[in-house]
Amino acid sequence: MRYYMKQKISFFQDFTIKDDNDQDVFKVKQKRLSIGRSFDVEDVETGNDLIEVKQKMLSFMPTMQIYLDGDHVASVSKKVTVFKSKYKVDELGWTVKGDIWSHNYTIEDEDGNVVADINKKFFAWTDTFEFDINAEAANPALVIGVILAIDFVMDMEED
Image: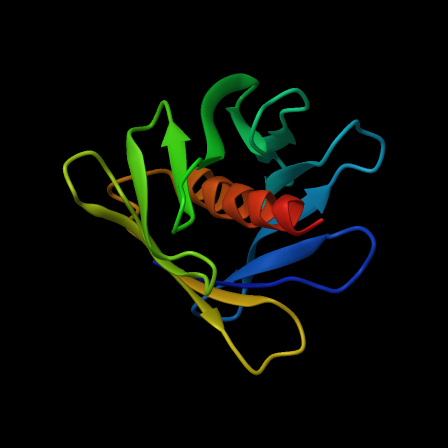
């Protein structure tokens, strides 16, 4: 399924993720009172929190931890490399491949199957992403959590 995400330029990064029909499907809400960056991905229809993503405060490289129903399911961090930025998604066995800095990359499972294909739209006022998620391969909310965690790790490196 194809989704669209347009991040607003604001102090608090709350925004929605839309489907092909321009309908809000998920809402991303940054937590206001937390140590480090933290946000929830919520189902717009039910209002239920689906995924929580939190910054790991004491780590060598910027790391975001992802929780599903309160259980830690994955960590996203940058690998230490000399020439190219590489990211790893621990616990899920996923690999991030492509041009991450341009936000044109894929997330693949351990068998090489594409879980998601992410593309940034240029010539937009805000960060605008289009991504296709293979819903048969993974929970779309979990994939969105991983995509957002990669984006936040990149932001932390720039700060």
